[in-house]
Image (cartoon, rainbow, N blue to C red):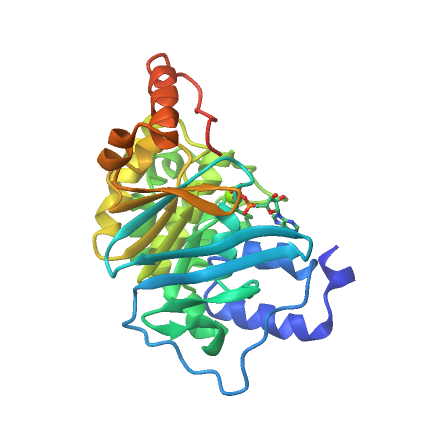
Length: 304
Ligand code: ADP
Ligand code: MG
């Protein structure tokens, strides 16, 4: 299907991305069939690689003109801080991620990284700077090891193994007949949703971008695996600016700032403690999840 819709120019684009930052190729493939790529401005600058604050300034966006998705959204993530966004399915959370990675341009407003307008920088430098663990992960028909290495194609075996450990994939790999050399993907071993997410997390860890985005990155995991991975990620996030789109509220408790998004608008904002004290929407969601968690065996689906 991709071939049918993909104009030739995209092949070069895809190839460059494969050679460069691969962690988000899966998103690109999906989008390639949907719309032409956003293009670099004629005088596009290279994004300062030490810049890692993120700000949305009055950002509005619609996929179709008559159906607004984000409405005058503003927030700032200071360097090294963690911002979480929670909200019901369809609220516009993943759209925020797509705008930050510049799969689309806002209809109005400005997105900046370290003060630079992302529509004025090269897409390549932008995508080097931002590592995304997407909601769905696509595996390539290659070994598990190489699937992780897509995060950074020049990574050494040792670096790949380290990322695998941090993503808690090592125990799983140890059980495979050919270990990390086992073929996965459509023509190989099929991985579960949770295992795929770990591959994706390992890729992003390996990519090592200063800005990390997790779009419900642990939603397919059971709570115990989620906890273990979150501990690794917390370690990693200490040196990074992170944007976490959360599935379970337990994953956002330690965020510096939490936004509650409803129909493309921020309806509440604060730390976990502040939002609980407010006793409004966030507090209600928290209560609902806490009571479910008491007897939890399956993932909670209040927010997804
Ligand atoms: P969330 O991640 O909070 O569940 P999304 O950002 O994925 O929400 O979606 C917000 C809204 O935008 C939803 O109503 C969704 O159906 C719509 N949407 C998402 N992607 C597209 C697209 N490519 N084209 C048209 N509408 C879309
Ligand atoms: Mg989403």
